[in-house]
Image (tube, rainbow, N blue to C red; front, side):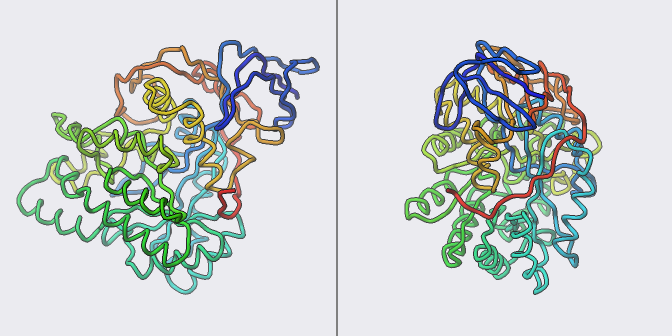
Amino acid sequence: MRTLIKNGTVITASEKYRAAILIEDEKIIALQSDPGTGADEVIDASGKLIFPGAIDVHTHLDMPFGGTVTADDFTSGTIAAAAGGTTCIIDYALQTPGKSLQEALDSWHKRAEGKCAVDYGFHVAITDLNDAVMAEIPVLVSKGYPSFKVFMAYKGVFQVDDATLLKVLKKSGAAGGLVLVHAENGDIIDVLTREMIADGKVDPIYHALSRPPQAEEEAVNRFITMAELSEAPAYVVHLSDAGALGRVADARLQGLPVYAETCPQYLFLNLDCYYEPDFGGAKYVMSPPLREAGNEEYLWNGLASGNLQVVASDHCSFNLKEQKELGRDDFTKIPNGAPGLETRVQLLYEGGVNQGRISIHKFVDLVSTAPARLFGLYPQKGTIAVGSDADLVIFDPEAAFKITQGSQHQKVDYNPYEGFAGKGVPKKVFSRGRLIIDNGKYVGRVGQGSFQLRKPFSVS
């Protein structure tokens, strides 16, 4: 079947032009000034922008954490992704201590297979390193799993020591892999947390105060130091703090291959959210936590300058009732995380492009092209070009939106951006040439999402 999209304005990370897009067999087969004829279906995109499908490289779907499991599984999560203009996600397969990395991947494949509305891939989180696990790293890179996550926080659960981090960096870097790190000093957090609990400080605000900005800045600096020693590329996930951003910027100025993502919550929310009454602050318990008001402007500047390369969601949804409430009397028992897969693209367009903080080309780069390049999906994904997957978003820049829990596709009982309004709405979303979102309604087939093997790390 051939589909023609005509009269729209194509926007990529570097170009803006009018073209008709011809799609056949899941691929873009022509970009032409004259719409021509011969298509089985013709879609008029007059007055609309056409972006490459967005890529969210940081999600947690169907993930056990803190005695419960995320509210969104791979079906509800990927439908929500599609509704927001995201056509590919990369989730995290978490190693169980004593088990292999391949066993972690096998487990996550079972969770996702036949359930995804958009394409998907996996990072592998290393929590228990031994010689056998070390030997798996280059094998997995060659198989199409080139990214590995380690945690410098969550002491006694996920946190690894410096020796483990250094070994993973060396092994991964030599094999063409990319190491991702959750950068917070878990020992600092552990001491502060114990002190606060002992003093009876159990409300959600103390989650944030037990994880100060200095704990993130120190961990980012330590990670960069070890990456430099290893001659390995380094990627900081969910960077939240201006001081930590400064460490990344300094490293990049020295020419080091250091990259970082931030998330919408750090661009639009702040520490004041934790004071929401009736335990409402628990909705914003995530790690790293929200920061003081004013910090967000440093992050916006980091996006504009190129010192932050990606905006991901870190979607990790838990209902306030029955899940977040597990920590009503002890903030350490509140499951960490918040939803954001569905709203990431619109938030960044409104807060970035419409408010003049970033260009429209930078917007496309942050949500699609840079993620594709860094994580081995480009040019199959992340751009609009002949031969690329027909992952496309027909976007109405003038359509108004208002975010509400009741209108979302995410299966969670709140939305952290409740009431946020702006302009810019994905009207039609195509995944490999198939229409999956039509005016906000999911019209695809659950299970049509395809698992994506990825190339070794390269920024070329």
